[in-house]
Image (cartoon, rainbow, N blue to C red; front, side, top):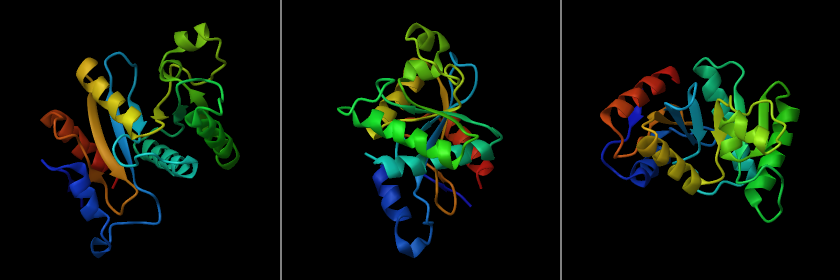
Amino acid sequence: DLIMKGLVATSTLLKEVLKDKYNLKTESRMSHIALFNVPEYHKMLAISDVAMNISPNKEQKIVITRNLVACLQKIGIDSPKVAIISAIESVNPKMQSSVDANEIVSYFRKEMPKLEIEGPLAFDAAINKRASIIKNIDSNISGNVDGVVVPQIESGNILYKSLIYLSKADVASVIIGAKIPIILTSRSDSSRDKFHSICSALMLI
């Protein structure tokens, strides 16, 4: 029913999962979802993708975003608020993540007009309303986002571990997009976080 990573490298597990003989792949792209309970934030915060897709292009980020929305809806957030993260809030051709974010938001506003999605947003503006006010950013979701999509695996991985070790956040980590959920925690994650990951995966079956 579920696959769970143990004391092995992520690449070791994923190489096996992606083999045709196991018949676990679907037409959808797999992506990683990390669900955080951060003491300083007023509700659960989902972050994607911090462990599966290394340097996704715009089209791949669209799938990652779609997977994130579907995951949030499946666990009971009917109208998720999603931020596409960059280091800035305006489009700069020299910063590809800002260009991608703008195009991803435009795509979803056509395909899913009821979805509350904004970007590019810096992380502070996404999770803190005061930051967006000071920066003079007109945002309907600032300070109240349910999920964020990071530009690439490095920024996501650093954010993931910063929240755990510096903010004492609880986390549950699952890969979705396969025929069954794949529990993919860090080897250094606590047993409590691994238990939370199993519970979250069961909600996504």
